[in-house]
Image (cartoon, rainbow, N blue to C red; front, side):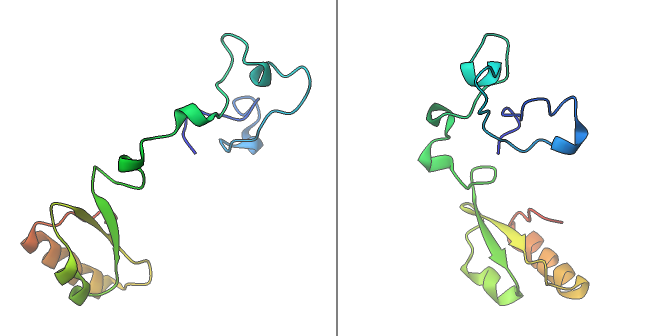
Length: 107
């Protein structure tokens, strides 16, 4: 969820966090969309289809081995190394990405 949409009283009570919850009470000023109050989630705020799910304008690809790098285009894709990849293998993947000019998102 975007940082623009905040739960009511989340700035006052830390335990609520930044997660969005729809205001439901009858006299809630956020729900009524009163001036100067936080914005409410509506369909008009959605991002364009062409840019959804992209990181820096590139499609993310999950990688677990060096062999999977052969299928990747450096202009269109960005690499995310899997969480179950160990330190040695991760280092080899990063070196290979640097050679090919592919950007790695999670280092």
